[in-house]
Length: 366
Image (cartoon, rainbow, N blue to C red; front, side, top):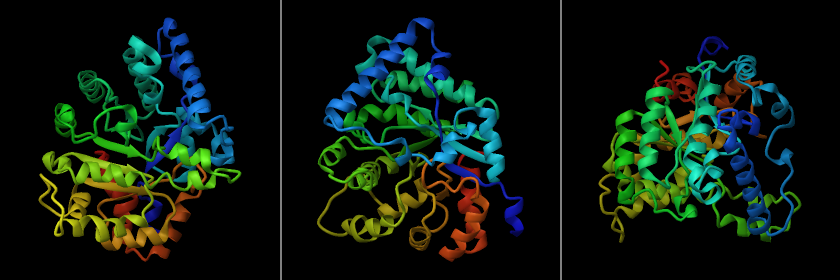
């Protein structure tokens, strides 16, 4: 495999299950019941309102059974061993359940801020086993901007954070979209701090209507549509002029799917700059902003990878293992990297950028 044998592969999307016990160990004893009660309320809401009384999907629909049972799904030392087995140098780690979905004012009242910090501390303690190889995607709330600013300062100073995860759909939380002026000091600080914003694939609130109407046994219609609302997120960042206003801000879209992106920009976004639409603050083609300030992760998608490479070039594409979800290539990532990029027809120099170089640069690893 030549140079691949010594190359520092970096996965920009991997997952860890931070158990209730792991999180509560970082909270005052008085807050343990607050955490448990918030989880109970969240599940009751999901069961009654989101799922409309229908049963939740089986775990096997969301994880690879073998990978999910590996201790690396739960424990930091074991996580490093799982990465070594896979030949992966470093990973960006997302929680299976984002702490921001639980630690919020709706479920916890006045205790939410302390619990939120405790959750990020739980992530930091996981990463502390190897702060270079384990890059946790720290949670960042948008309910209280002053608190979010303090959390960015704390994470950057004390936890050596490299990235923060934001909900891709603030409106689902009853909040303004990313272009709103309330976020201005937060975007300025993140830009100044050199942190990368991560918008991971998530379930838009409106998609739950599809879940309730989906007649298929594993809700295959519902699960196949999660990528589509990310088009809205991309537009809110780019077509509102927000990214051009903060030219050093970087936003990566995690698990968006690649195949639709060239069509979306070439057929819809870029042409509208020259048609009957006005986008105040937007001075360059949207695809150019995407190339310069955005990026997309992928797992195994050789055709989509080919098309994105042809349209955007190599500098905004980021490889991932998606451990331990069904699309994961663990523990055969190095073998799959060779086969996927050969199938995609991408030259070796650009393959290296996509599987390691871009991430090493973006997250300051080399």
